[in-house]
Image (cartoon, rainbow, N blue to C red; front, side):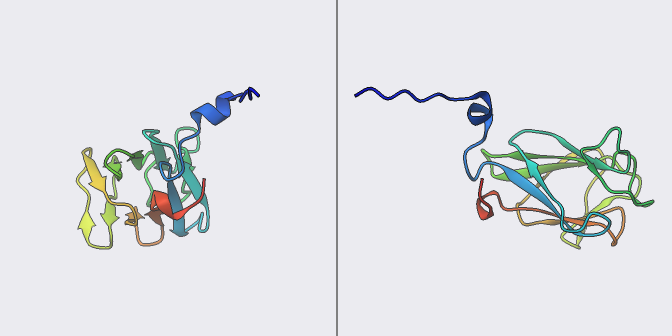
Length: 128
């Protein structure tokens, strides 16, 4: 008996489990929000709702504060700081401005000040 499987566009474009990243807001105006990050999809984070995918409405956050994407081949996030006030990685390091930086899953990013913090989730830690 022949069986036919129909693959829809949404099913075909959906990444395999474990390939999609996630940004979780753990402190600040959007605390508790989860944002999916598809492989290679560039996500803009900032204050300007007309330009950014994730909006953080805080004065210390620049209109377009940073760009984040997930590289599934290397299992790393790539973050570019485009801000005035900077990004602190894991409460220790200030990311360089306008330079792509590899950031490991599970890392925290302090966006603009200590009042807005996100986590770059481990892709394998959530279900698709």
